[in-house]
Length: 87
Image (cartoon, rainbow, N blue to C red; front, side, top):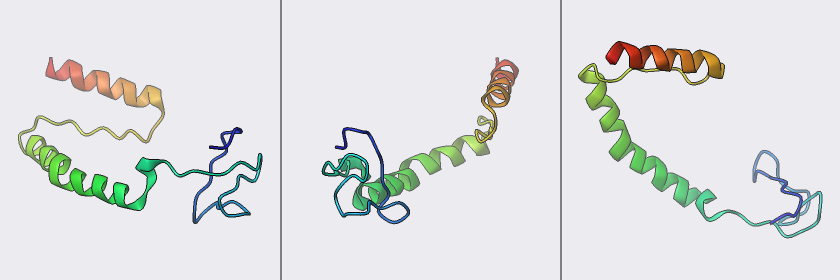
């Protein structure tokens, strides 16, 4: 692992020399949970386990969708409002 904590992406930001950090020259390693097969399994498990739960609660009006891609204070306020309404 690079001592400088630099990160690279195999397609979008590869190192200049394969398997070597551009900044500190140490050998690069790929995390075990970052291999394509592991990610594919994680997505399959989501489709099989999580997505059905989302649909289950959505159809029973037990789920409140909240867009988390907004400023933290906006999301937090909406979360509080959703909990207060249900309490």
